[in-house]
Image 1 (cartoon, rainbow, N blue to C red):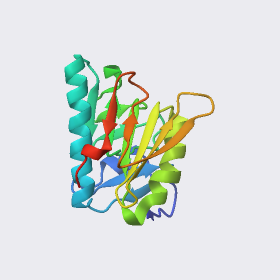
Image 2: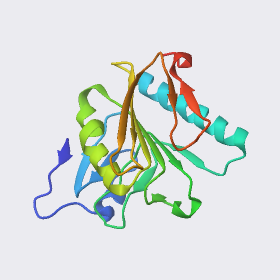
Image 3: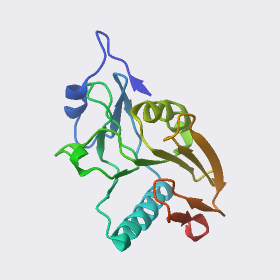
Image 4: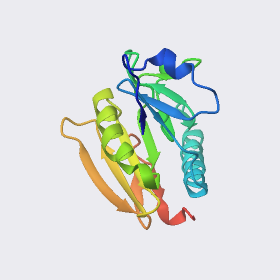
Amino acid sequence: MPLAKTMDSYTEEDYYNLPEDIRAELIDGQIYYQAAPSRIHQKLVMLLSKTIANYIDAKGGSYEVYPAPFAVKLRKDRKNIVEPDISVICDKNKLTKEGCLGAPDWIIEIVSPGNSSHDYVRKLTLYMDAKVREYWIVDPEKEHVVVYHLEKKLFDMTTYTFRDIVPVHIYEDFSIDFKRVEL
């Protein structure tokens, strides 16, 4: 739910002035507060982050993997800062002391039951406009993964189940076997 501001929209300054124990995102000048994630949500973030980091380490890659909370300022405007559940950044020049400035190459969001439109609609549009290369929406309740391959002019969307092996488009030889993800 956005927090309404009477005069104008919120900015980066408002976002960074929030208390540290408050989880929120700034999208198009509106602050969206986030509830504490569930245990299943956090387990998925941990398992997926670890799987991705292990792959990158095994390949000797220099890409960086960051689980939330991690601030991603998608554009140079002062009205959009998100905290994706998992961000994979290939260009280390995008990393700042606050987080990431520019679009991560791969973002994964784990759907929270009462907030699914935030990931499926609002963030999809935002990530597409920011030129995120690949966006996954993992829905533990429905046990499916929606993969958006956004590098093409007309992006590809494929839906997988938690019984599938899901290919990662930004890496030629990497996939995640969701059968191994035990909730």
